[in-house]
Image (tube, rainbow, N blue to C red):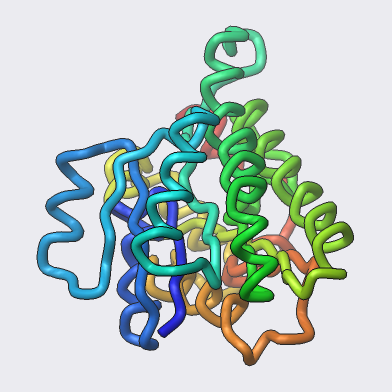
Length: 249
């Protein structure tokens, strides 16, 4: 039975990915810094190991990877999903706010990947980093978030180039608008309507649809796929730059 680490696993895309991998026969180490929510998410699931960890903390990440390796005997896949969604204009984005986004969205991906690399060498495993359509196209209010996700995409290619000789594949999923509880809580009806108009499939994606893309890239079906950015966005990336409705958000 293969083992995957999924960060940001207490909710949203991370939890959907956990469930998808479990359905495909994996064991999953569920990683999150929200201890209570992680416990609630993991409680009804079998073949999981919930681990409280802040992915921006190098010592905590090293301990987490050691615990997973000791418990499950190895690591076959790493899903770097943990992220902070913090939006605001350039002029009002403080450096503290910038760093809060970067330390989770970018530093966390680097730290978890680096710590897991020895185990992934042994298994010739795979890394899937979760970026965003905001890393592929500029948009309003996303100076920190979008920049962090663009950096994750480049980091993915760097990983593919350097780790490929060990049989480790590294790919990236860039979700478009996804119907999460958080998104629906903060998106006004005007924003929802604007997204529907701008997305060729005329709808938000679901957490499960993103999870399926992630599971594919972890699987042997993608055994010759590495260094790629897969935009799971309903075609949103092909329709232009930005949404006027977001400027009033």
